[in-house]
Length: 101
Image 1 (cartoon, one colour):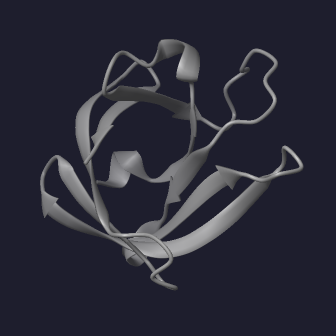
Image 2 (cartoon, helix red, strand yellow):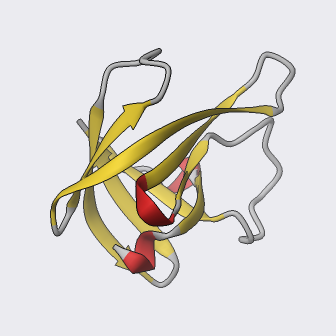
Image 3 (cartoon, helix red, strand yellow):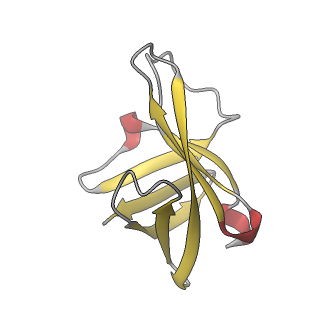
């Protein structure tokens, strides 16, 4: 899980079907009106970034719990969204591919 720590933004140009592609926030993305993403932090902290009505980002704090070596269960502190699972498909060459269930 340590290698998943950091802030990841959706590289939607690289999404394939149900598999979502994320790159570190330091990546030189092409121009976009906004990119949703998330931060996986130590000690089970999680922040989801959604595109705000003004094209900026809003953050939604929560927690992550490892359910297996490749699955994280996400829960939001304010219960504003149902819990979901991020299943890691791969992490290669700076691209994190996940399926959200």
